[in-house]
Image 1 (cartoon, rainbow, N blue to C red):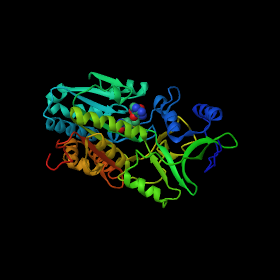
Image 2 (cartoon, rainbow, N blue to C red; image 1 turned 45 degrees about the horizontal axis):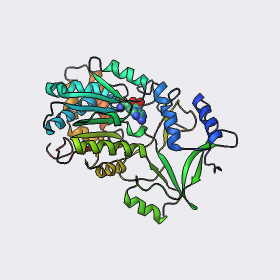
Image 3 (cartoon, protein in one colour; image 1 turned 90 degrees about the horizontal axis):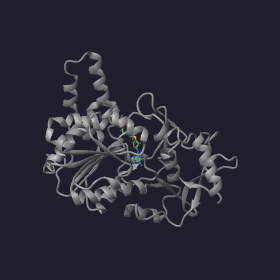
Image 4 (cartoon, protein in one colour; image 1 turned 45 degrees about the vertical axis):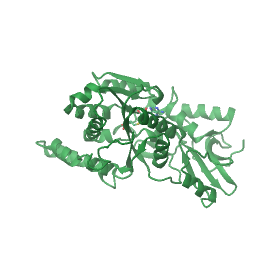
Length: 379
Ligand code: SAH
């Protein structure tokens, strides 16, 4: 299959996984961006989450739970209030998707101790593909009984509270491009020197189902020359399954991530290495790969599955409504000046519009008729 080369990097794909991907492409042809992402992140031997230590100042990026314990504690208060709104079921599934080091769940459970009945009712389930991170999560969560799953499909039935921070951005996206000759899918192939390179493969139309209908109409209008449209069948598939169970068995889900509110056109595939942006094709398995989350597509998938998505909140607004200022003040009480300053800086980082406050957004989805804290009036 011919590939029309786009931009080219100098030395692409030179990692062991890069060599394997190049060999695969040489044998069987170009692969989709989604397949490329899935290999880079999840390859059992060389995948990023299987081998690397992504988190913290020595890693590649810092996530909200790693910025401050206040983040997980407030999500814990949200979970307790949600459980109370659900009628305090005596047993429920408390699930986290992509728990990383396990920090969020540990902080959540600690804050939730103010309602011991919550902890007694919670059955903790973690959805995590990386054996290495499962070991870390087990260590962080100490004595808590935890069940792991490789996929949301095996979570047990029953009422559930599900949280996910920076999980959906790690799910593979397919990229479609509107060219003068019609729609094409962006692929990863090889250039003439045998290095990984982006190219385009003509398709008759981008897949209809994950696209909000208004965007389908716009896209057909042809006024979006060269715009890249990203869809994540993996993300909408997971939300759809979870929303279906919330509608059936009750409960709520909180997805916190960076992304856009409405369907947007643009290439958001990004690689991060050592806190800096990198070429997504340069170091397969060594750099983190993510894409912005299309929250409109997630909300539409949730609604189609029978659950109720709420309007998005910015992370800053969400944390403010849960009382981050008071919580930080209590944490700082009696501490030395350096600690007080560090807590203030962490709160700023989580909430300020020029930090994580607005780029990061919070989507809540629940069974219908549930009053969710921070989202529904005085709940
Ligand atoms: N929530 C954590 C970690 C975010 S990184 C935090 O905020 O710090 C993404 C996490 O999702 C990692 O734990 C990674 O191993 C996991 N992950 C990525 N893709 C996954 C998939 N398809 N299924 C399950 N877990 C996945």
